[in-house]
Length: 368
Ligand code: UDP
Image (cartoon, rainbow, N blue to C red):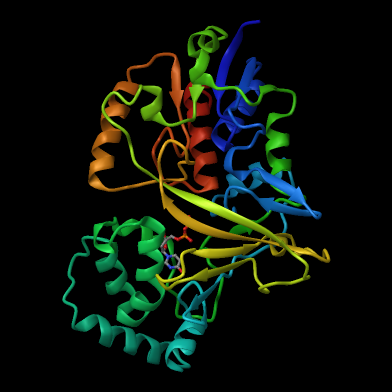
């Protein structure tokens, strides 16, 4: 059977592309090397709790079209991410807001908080921040940087903050209101019943095959369709011919506890360098679970190698230049579409991946 599209990888990019192509009457086959569909948003149900097996995912977007799009497959709950930060046993609210400033300095007004931060920034003489450290220092001053950013960032990325791009820290808001909502976006939530519902909705009626390795039989797979949508690592697609891109990986340690509520929040960050994990996730709180047990996951960042999952692209100059080489040759392909966090080598959030896939769909089918 000949397909119009072979989609390699069933994460959000692949699933959205397949759904849209299928809607336009194209025959699609989606394959995945894992034993399940959904890429990193896949959840495993245990004790009645949806466990975010490949890291916590909280959907948020400012784009009403994308919000309506995901809600057309599954309704979302009203979960709002308000992580806590634990620094040497002290608890602080995130993102950096009036609650955090009160906890740090006892200040009660925005004016007092601004004045402390300004005093700390003044002496630093940073005019144009060149890296994450300078960006963070010039946004929030020294206290917050040394307590809540430096340790977390350096263990998360395994590099000094002076060698990391400034944009990573711009993901975090700084607010002079008492608002613990981690995201700035208008819309936020978790699918009712878990993320698998979203993937199932997207891939409904589409042929799928799991536990298959595309690269093992690339030629055979390629012959099955007129076009390929590739969502894996772009450097692997090209046999690493220019060298290997670097990624940051994670190790997850899941634990079932015989207690109803372990930490009182879905996400607690551990911000000092000495604690080897960056955060503990208590999954039930994403869905306001009332089960008698709870499942927690410790997240340990680690350097990536072939035996590990490539979770984050490393956006430094070296990897950026290398990626451009791959991108250049990928542009010449007539029958291969590249997309998603790994193929575009971009630190995408879920809504951005969906946006990117919908853009490719528009392009591919020349609709408006
Ligand atoms: N970050 C930090 N302290 C925190 C949380 C985050 O310094 O308590 C920094 C860190 O550099 C991290 C970045 O902010 O890589 C983005 O954090 P986010 O939670 O958005 O990352 P993700 O959930 O994608 O890992």
